[in-house]
Length: 179
Image (tube, rainbow, N blue to C red; front, side):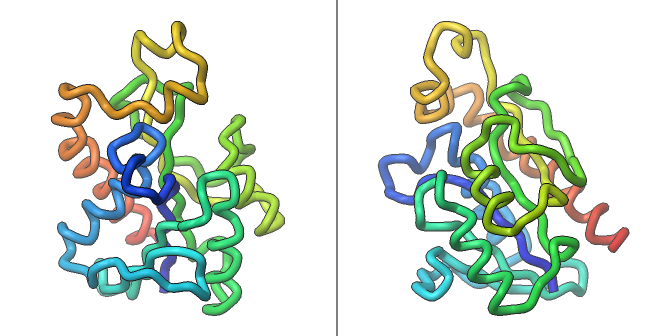
């Protein structure tokens, strides 16, 4: 069983923000692989979907704790299902990568991302497999980080997301095939 974690902020006002790319990617996976629709699970502090990808049972979670407390939801679900860090893949935005760059990392520090920091603190390890989506563009230098990540994607960026998500899903499938 694999746990796929998307980071974002849950109220509808944040749906198309750059900071919600992890949630948007999980929505893409639900459609692509015909997984169960997300439903709110209070005991996991998030929205959960389940299904099968490449003959592997998967659980997807979108924490409903706000970004900075995402680790609470992930710790709850990993403890409940007794999952190890090797069973988890994390998806989130990276402001230090240009828009369109997708990077898989097997471990590392938070890089200032407070949602990732919350996971590291709650799980007690930096050994978290992650796929990062670059969100930086030329506005990045003119706008404070907190405001930039909460802006909606530009129209051209939004149009590019399906291709980026398809590429990221290929990285995920390759990773699952190696496990």
